[in-house]
Image (cartoon, rainbow over all chains, first blue to last red; front, side, top):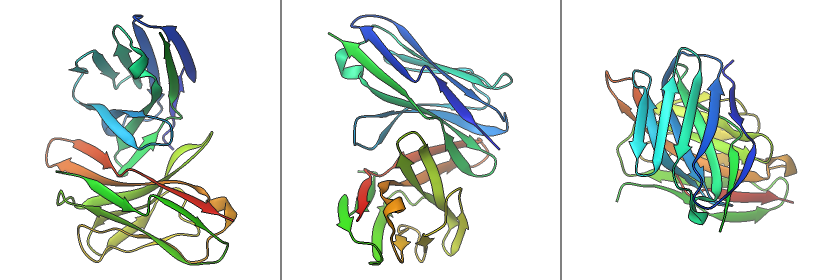
Length: 111
Length: 116
């Protein structure tokens, strides 16, 4: 059974710092990996999607990498801002036609 | 605008009173699914549908029903809600890129359900 783990569970950093969020998954039989952002009590906003054949994707200050063979992905946020404060969720779309989520990393960027 | 809509957004009900949460997408996606989100447990799939009249159980289907009579709608039905179904529910629609192993999920805004 696919398991997705995110480390750390929570992170607090000063504004301007670069940071890395980690995601690992146990079964490499995936179509793609998707990073989401969720603000408290709100819905999910898709940030980046990496196909299983890709190594990384970039959008603005965000860069996500994927190492499918080792079951790892990282989300790099450059020059963090208070507006980046949210929960970040990693999810893999597996061959069983299901999106399996990690528990998330709660990020707080202090001004 | 491409979107997934859910209604209602907030619902407080009592044990045993049947309810339906509607979900609709305007992107002509074949694949849709329902998730619930609970503190400490993350998001878990309840049911999914590969196409019209094709539905299947996810990880936590007990106490829920779904139907898929038309491509755009995928309602979630709680025949006899119980307090342990108090949760935040998300409907999702998936764009599947044929031959590209690429499945992008789009989520609705969520429905916060409280069962007393």
